[in-house]
Image (tube, rainbow, N blue to C red; front, top):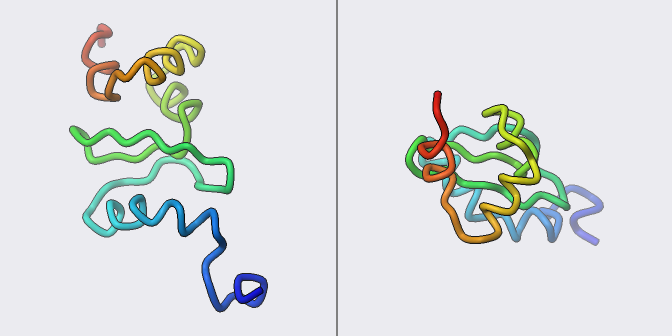
Length: 85
């Protein structure tokens, strides 16, 4: 109820509080966070992508391949480094 009146953060935003902490530590946010966001965090480059799709698009990678690699446990920095410039 408080969220409806702007008093409290929406529940989905509370779940992303770790993202807010990283942004406060100097990480750059690419894309826009929303209730469906599953952020991709690139610790090496201190960048947060709002979704796998935004991460893929930013680096011009194939979305389905990147989604599978992230799901298998690869870190964003590993995905970037294994592809030629």
